Length: 504
Image (cartoon, rainbow, N blue to C red):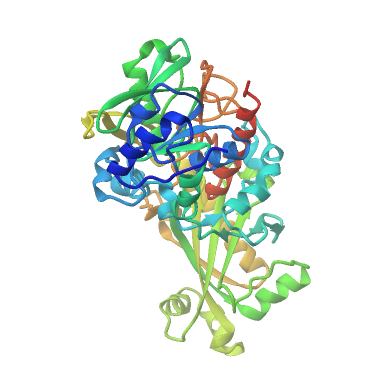
């Protein structure tokens, strides 16, 4: 039986290579020198070790299919890697640092090294423009939950005619921490850290090798290549390869276009009468009632018919409950704006029977061709262009926010649960500042059936290529309001099944 030795020092590596590897007993699990494998032909080279790339490597391993896993960073965070992730923002959507670099990590485990852990599922309606359906990903829900250590069930339930309650479940998994020792011991995963992918080599849609940099430039070969470096880096690397090797690409591919994120902003606040709020749940037989002793929050989304009728974008509606005091600023505003309701409220209820709520939206962005990632003029330390991001807020984003918060205010009013105050900017002509984004870089190598408006097909193979695939949220055709990581893992699991069928 072959055995595995984990090598830690350069001297020991040389000794082992000289005395053992020639007998075929050794697999170097952490690759120190790419020349060790440059003459080998692997089944797959997986570029990027975040949730998409690492999930794929682990699943191929279960099928006893070998792969080289390339990671540009090390197994720990290094601030110097930010030099590869800078860029310029053109447009009015976000702060450039927040949008381009702050949400990304260049290390083993990828951005899962600092993600918030929130997971939820795409709605059925989110797939209406995709070449696959929600049911195509459902077989991978349980596997993805296991990978992410998720214990709670996903659910969605009607709150009213136009609102759904859904749950956010949270993962504490840091992919790098959870899987590094496993990968070190694997007989089928060859991990090379601090290895920068440079470009693809080949002709007419067939990749013959990739060029990497690890102390020196070197080419590596495989049957299949899978790019999993995120919604900004995936198009950057593809565009650079297209520039370096124009004969390899179909130049009609919309690489980098249709960039999306999840803008986050506060649209209003409200007071609710707590017993009326819980009575509404009881009277309408709603199972998933918020439990204030556990979490003073509730998450809502819109029903598809409402979105279609109003021609608006979906949103996650974050309702956060807090205790209220008689001198609370919001109560003072309510006293001025609605004195009769304020007197009724305070005359008939004790102040500790009332809750203040804040109302935040995590919005779906429209997939606009002009919102895009392109190569800029500034260069990274290896002389590859850094990105320029074109990202402008659409009027539809603001109109969607207005319709949604207005509907929620009517829900409170019509059921006499409470009253809402809506931020002025939602309805006036002034621009509004998005104070955060999800760091969910979506859509820049989107899935679809045609090269006219997509980069990959339903199996995540790049149009016009024989052996190039892409993973991660850059393949999303629309963003929904959904936190993407669970869906990213589902797609990686599905891709592993597809690739395993290609083994000769």
